[in-house]
Length: 428
Image (cartoon, rainbow, N blue to C red):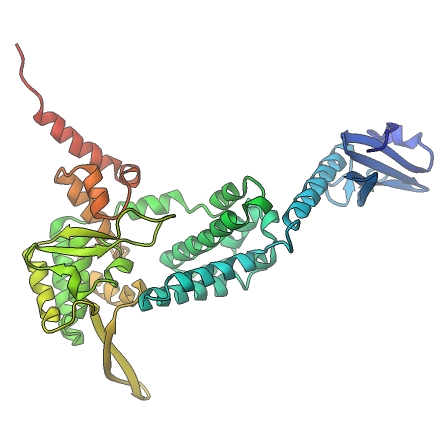
């Protein structure tokens, strides 16, 4: 059991000046003692804590403020010494807990495990494997090369994550930062589930607030709602630009499906020829891999206009139902600055749309910061404005009613107000 402590007066300079040379202890916790080791010219603070079997750990802290004024770092007054002692003991206990089942996992290990997980999960999908490579590239370049990579997870603090964000290159595009932060957050949250017994109970809260995105930026993105006329303008510009590039309608069809369904590009690239049902005017869209756990459905039947079906019929003729619906030409280099068409292959990631989309928006009078994701926002709002039940809008767009109400509450309210107005009856 722990020692019976004889308390010493060490709280003030004057009290310590009266002490004899040697070590003097004061309890700050039932199993933690702050020590003052007095020498010829002042003293030093130390801390010890009980580890069981009548044994203690002991560690030096800093110089006492007997001669020099306290600065909170290498010279401490009593109060500062108590605070540092408690932090060191808490950290030591966390280290012991984290290493109880083996070496403590670091940020680097968590990221590598997450990348391996995505690789295994998406092995059957070439497009998603490519997406995994994008995530691996971003995380390797901007996280694994940063000092935070070698930080043990149980020691990770909000400020470590905030400092990492501040160290990101200033010329990184907002979209790249958003995807990078989401990848980083996903890797840490996966580790939180795997190693929850070895991590502090507030670890996920640390991740949430440390990697919190700017509310203003997120809100601005949600406000990118396009009217039907603007969406039509984008489609026309996409058709014209597609013709100029000689893409044979590949670009136009991708934009058209994104606009018509409001699906994420990661879903659209997985569409097969057999997912289009011309007779029912529907496209069967695979659900995304977003979220946790398994989903109740694997596909969503989304109704589309006949002109969408007509645009897709040209690439469906004489093709197997299992073949990718949307493809594009791949090119190979035949000489310096010379490229030629090589073969057709499926679209892979959203990054392939970045340059064409920028040119399409440039040809319209729509704000240049409008993202392709605006087509999804607009589709959701279109459903709400047409008074579809919120639950149906959420189901069609592979999201939750909670997310719809959180991010599109104004449009939900407007739709409900319109319905309520129709129920007004003049009485009396």
